[in-house]
Length: 145
Image (tube, rainbow, N blue to C red):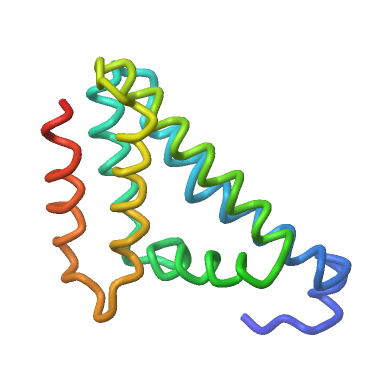
């Protein structure tokens, strides 16, 4: 479906407003919706569901390539950087909450290690084989359960 330039401006108003809408969509799709999908189960089950949800979108536009692109954008754009900082804090905070609920000795540091593993896996060149990230996340997470 081809859109005209006029239709774009009618919908978004301007390129800066489009960027804000895109950042909002990314934040909700890759953070809010994933956390919401983890539900209100106990910490162990939410952590396992979170793992499934985080890996679910690996083949669509909201997968790891988008994460890498947004982080690159955040290095050059203050609005993208603000969103990325908010997303990182929310994700690490949520992991910390779950790990604290499991009785992890240092939940903030452990949450940071888990999160850094997830972020780092998306940046490897060449990319990891499709099922390899799950194995890495399980290697880090399962001993904590």
